[in-house]
Image (cartoon, rainbow, N blue to C red; front, side, top):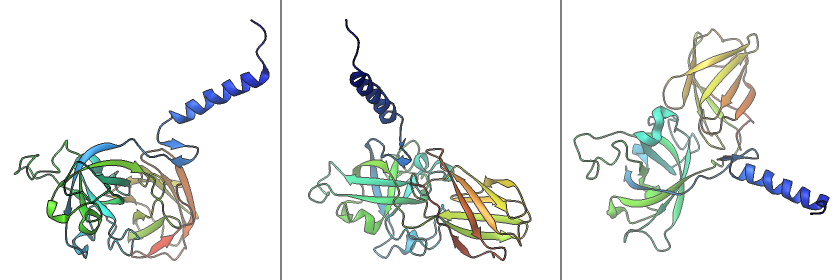
Length: 263
């Protein structure tokens, strides 16, 4: 066999590199890649106003002010993952039901709440969110984009998708001068958070512990310092630095915006 041409060698190398990136998972070339489609069921809670969906186990508060609106869902325990599922985005499609609207429409929702187990009811008859079921309890307006609400429960296909956010992450401050509690909202990319650290203008990086939902805490005296944050995604492991998010005169109850975000 004669020598292999340089162009063939380059093409083969390119093909190998492409395959490596294609099978590397849900994080490719700096962007979150949709997951495969899976099957579950969906119900809804609240009414058309979405008032009962405000607040919730992720701690996002008023979902209109937080930027999520009514395109939201509460996750069963299996998907909620002790709060690490907060902020994740799912494309949900109505399938295999006479109640589906024509064309099997889909919609994208953000996880903002927990659908708790109901051990008094069978998992296939009312206990829809009992482990190990994967289930979405959607805001009623989101559910109504898929099917007639009178269905009550519908089979769905779902997949994780990138959270497309406008602007950077938002950091809502709670706590006091010696205990900093941060709720992180408007997270792009995979939408979730695994860990955080805070840096004062006079300190090194201080690791924050997971409190509940989408909140992280640091037991440190940081008042009077401008603050920066290091945020790591639960799904992808990617880390983003949000520099100088809050001024030195920051206060609890305020929300500060950053230009930094995941893609």
